[in-house]
Length: 193
Image (cartoon, rainbow, N blue to C red):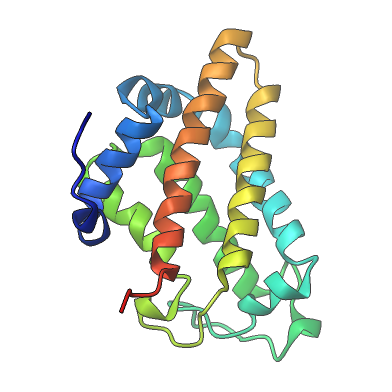
């Protein structure tokens, strides 16, 4: 039986990643499958981003988080939900971020910098990243991760892959998305008294 330093899991993102990856079974073969999927996923990313944002903008509980000024965006801010459309400049800006997220998954080495990136993806949706106006509730982040998982895994099932390779690729992305979801959830935990 392995001994895990549980307090370190909360303080050291690399240690946390390594623990999760080992526990879930996310290893070099999974990374290779994800990186090899670039030829299939790359051209489909715009469609996946559109599907994700179609869902996000269909509910006021998720769409309302795109009304406040987004960090790094200098264009016109929507006055309210009624102005928020899939083509609003601030939504296009956010779509670009999701596009880059997918590109990061398939194009980066899974090294300590990638671990920091996965952790920041969770943190930037909370005031902990510096923008007090961005405070997306955990339920909405879980909804987002569920949609991303669904559109991505559905897409993979349509790729021209041998069934065994398709299953392995789906499993690899599924493991990665569970790790990502943990790196989202960790920023919502309250400190224990």
